[in-house]
Length: 192
Image (tube, rainbow, N blue to C red; front, side):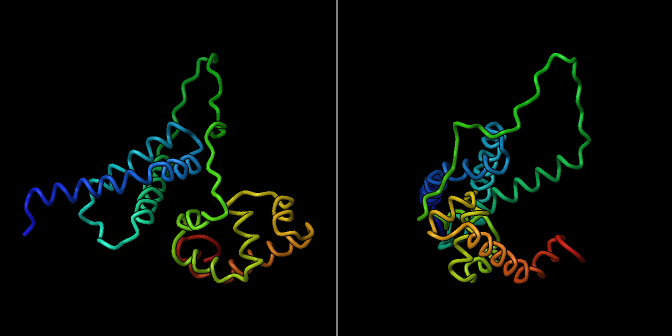
């Protein structure tokens, strides 16, 4: 039977390990929301849920993946809730239009060695499908679709012509589409 002191110690250790990932979670939240204030709210909600449900966390589970799942699910649930609510706008004509671009001062550019962080944002079947792509196709897809690199940047990194990059992207994306067809249908995407 756990004593109150050991429970408090375990809670503090859990809280510390959760807080180690605040920068990554904020960067992911900013990428999803494209708004610093919303990203802060999403990050805070993620931490509140993680701390509130720390008893659901199983020892030995990869905490970063667990936190990113909470963040992604929180974002999706908030998006659904907002999409069901009618938009209410009251303008006097003097307000400036809100900035819709993300804060230019805050960026999240993973190093090439940190691609695993980006793959943690996707579900396991998607990650597996990406990992099973042939190396050249996988690299091109990750650089284009996860790291938002231009074709020219990819061509420079892969040291190949632009047409080769476009071909690898086309073929890699087609392989992903084929591999994830059932997964997409199960999530309401694509033809039923």
